[in-house]
Amino acid sequence: MSVRRKLWIFLLTLWLLLIIIILLSSSSRYTTDSIQLKSKLLPPGGRISPEEIVKTRHAIGTDNRHKLFRQARHITREIWRLAKSQLSGSHVTASEKLSPEDLVDWFSRMSLLLETKLAGASRVDGQAKELVTQLDILAQTVQQRILNLQNPLDCRKARYLIATPKDSCGFGCRAHHWIYCFSVAFALNRTLYMSRREELEEFLPITKCVPENSPAEPFTTGDRNSQYLHCPIIDIVHSDLRPPALPRDLASALERLHGAPFPWFAGQLLQYLFRLKEGEFKRALEANISSLRTEFPKTGYRQPVVGIHVRRTDKVGTEAQFHGLAEYMVHAERFFKQKELERQIANADNYWTGDVHAPVSKIAPLNRRIFLATDDPSVFEDAKNQFPEYEFIGNRDRAASASVETRNSRNAILGIITDIIMLANTDFLSCTFSSQVCRLAYELMQTQHRYLGDASGQFESLDDLYYFGGQQLLPWKAIIPDAKRGIGLGDEYKLHGNHWDGFAKAERIGEEKGSQLLPAFMFDQQIVLLPNQP
Picture 1: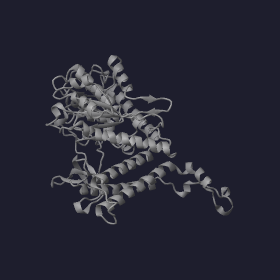
Picture 2: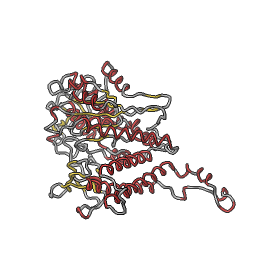
Picture 3: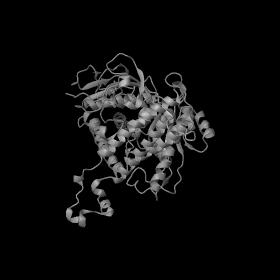
Picture 4: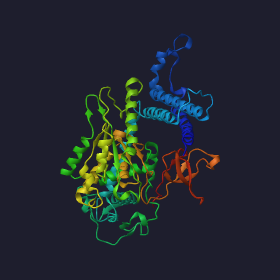
């Protein structure tokens, strides 16, 4: 694809973003009726001083957010003007004409500034704290519901969904099998029982109950009133209870609060499954998590850390392409540049206030720290030789134990569990969603809302979109019409993949015309709801 075509797509994307910014900023304004300025407070002549107007800022809401929105809108328009003039060549002198490389650099810097301003606009004036509070309440509600289901008052009368291990795949695949069965049990209001848990002895039991050894029909065909139902592997199941379906009450709340509703729910299930017993392994893991960061208690500064997972061995050439470490590091460097820019803006301007996620320090250095997890020990040598300005945290021995020959050993499984939990405790993930470990880390990361808020966008995948293996159809809705491509507003598509170059491979649902490459910004992922249960 030519540079010119890419830039035109970028221009279209920014045009849509400008519309979104205008809608967001206008929707948050208050009517004049909400500002109660009584006539007796006005000075003679009916005028009020600027100082008095400023005093009403608490009545009209988040003036800092409005300022950041205005700045974001200004940046968006400047990007549009730059793209229009440079691509069309109109009214551009020879001295103003940029090379394709310089133009891409300009767009990169301007879009980074735009993203930073929008991030601030969504967090300042206590908005981030309010979001954390609401997500925390929702998480506690889900965890309490799980506890009630998994600990029935009378084990003899409880209704069970029985899951057997999926022995034909690695740990990440088996963990997703547990999540799938757990989500079905949650939907059916049943206690999940896992018949064999030899590899999970470091985890707390998921239930106190042990059901009788009775035959159980699959939940897809068995009597829903039966005390025992079985959870078959997802590959052979055709059911509207499959992921990414969500309970309707949770979906309604998550649609407002979070950008990735099902990964958030999967993270809650995984958090329960990954509860650790007290012991050496738990203590070592907690020490490792603490060592991720250099804290500055006096200033409240929390050092950011990027998590990188490089999957090689049997994946390469079969389920995924080879990606060099440098490809992952591009996204890590952009994340750190944004954090530097965020700190510069917040320290220089007095309107980035009330942000619980970014208590920034003017004196603490911003260390470029990476937690590196891989199944290829040679990646650690690449990291040391190619990126000496970064501090890499990881364990070469864990990487060696993740080889195909040893990955099912006890030490290897503990190593994978450690990597997943450590990756989930970083601030940003650079990985490949074709990897089960990467997706598990992303799901578990969504439970870190007290530190990250809505962490749905804290990742870059070098290959696939997020998906749940064996999932049911997940529709994407067109949010803008395109007569040239025959796209109507609200049309639903299935996305086979995002090429991460502005285009996605999409297929209109209900038609048999095949897939085509369409601008990715035109589509928004929808929520799949569980059917109403009798």
